[in-house]
Image (tube, rainbow over all chains, first blue to last red; front, side, top):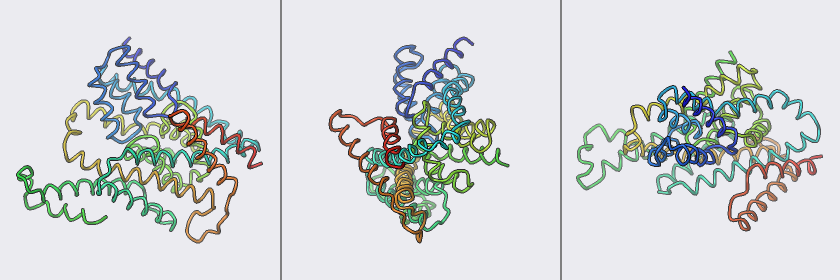
Length: 208
Length: 189
């Protein structure tokens, strides 16, 4: 029980002191749980980063859940996750109570007009940063360009099409391209996959 | 019912936002516009506040949107919705399916998801840029060019570039937000 509370308190501290989310938090988690407390090995920690990066949802949540589970099973996962979320929940809730009243002050409204520009800039730079990190193959670049153009066009023509579908289409194309490559590989490696049902999936690959 | 809608919307966002933080902005924009919760300008205000306060941006946004639409219970449900998928997937992966991530099929799926997510972030930025700077929400809208916004945008590019040249690292988002707040008071008076 004591360890659970220690875990939760540590997570609260991390939740309270990370600005900018995800990757900033990874270094704090490493510092607390691997270097200082040694509750986790480096190897396990790197597994966590891999999981966080390849699963949906906020990286901080993946991290807190993973570390909590490693430390104390399901209760650990719950306490860790609740801990990391609580400080920002309280802060944001308090802000939200008087945010609109705050915005009705004229100079604050002017300030926020400027801030909106900064946020658009931040979203642009996040997209560029992530694009630089993307491993670029003809396949990924094609998916990138196709989705970017389609999403902008649909929005400009006021056609409602949830981004969720783009993510799912991306997943299907990834799988399709993989199966297609598997089928058309000459060496024996993919031999066992060369059964008859695959061409159906491979056909999807031609869509982009 | 607003509570259920908030919970389900944020559950959906949490379930498909691969890559955290900015990855959920396009999804959140879809949900907020479709449900009539926030305008683009309000969304940007909320992102600014979420970015300048501690904690994951996605969680902060969920709390903020939930609270603005349905008070404390809305905030709780939206936050629970956005963290639940990540929580469950992580527990499943550690507890049972650890090897799943090393399968080639899983990697192949992610190789298609990643560029799609980055493209969605870029397109959200482009669409918000058009609406904020030119007043264009869809084809056919009258152009309402905002010179101060464009000037400020150019100034921010310059600041970010100079900072990188001189200090060798990226400028902090909070600094840019504060700077733009001050510039906003001057420019939009």
